[in-house]
Length: 252
Ligand SMILES: Nc1ncnc2c1ncn2[C@@H]1O[C@H](COP(=O)(O)OP(=O)(O)OP(=O)(O)O)[C@@H](O)[C@H]1O
Ligand SMILES: [Mg+2]
Image (cartoon, rainbow, N blue to C red; front, top):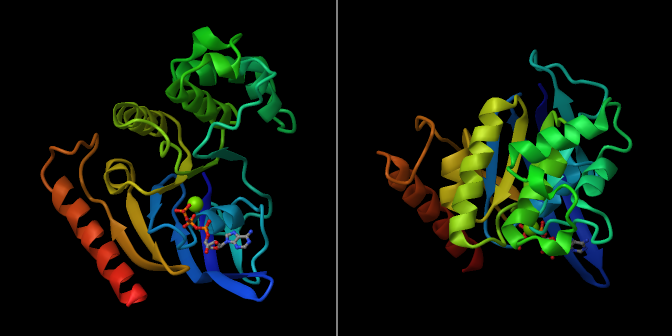
């Protein structure tokens, strides 16, 4: 399994005479096989961080590297699965073909089998021949999760994967993601706006503000987690309090 080391990453965007320090010396490490959530107010740099870890952007300074279980840097990029707020499915391809496309440049054999296993994991096996516009929003996000999973990712990167869903569908998908992660060894980094989601799913919650990690909060609650369990609401309230205090200090 693969871990992540983010070391002093900085990124400044310049548009005309305006510049934004989106990342400002971000440093943290993610243990192989762990589930880490990143939370923070809008514009604090979460998606920018995601894009740097995914290799979609280069930092001005700092390094992103990937680690084996002995904390040694690995030379190759890990096999990534990615999921975004919107499903990003190609409307002219069936669900099966959308997933097969995601496997095109992987070294995995038997692509058809990987696709049907992934659709089965998210309960969408009956829809392999459907087209994206025949699915509800929740079903489309299930397919997006299957598309990430069919690559058998060593590292699953998620940017607000359930952010556009209604509350019930969201809770259901959180449960399923928790089950899938327990059954499939992989490292997950999940960006979310939802503190309850972070506490339900993660081993650690990293709080971002102003392009930096300002708190690293372990979640020591037993799994499977649910809002009713002792300690859950207290931890949520503690994290929310911290975010609000930070926001206030930054905007005053
Ligand atoms: N390509 C870009 N060009 C210029 N500015 C950018 C670019 N990408 C991000 N930014 C700026 O960097 C800052 C951080 O953006 P980012 O998208 O990382 O925030 P975020 O934490 O993901 O916010 P949200 O929760 O709303 O998705 C913002 O001020 C944004 O305007
Ligand atoms: Mg974002």
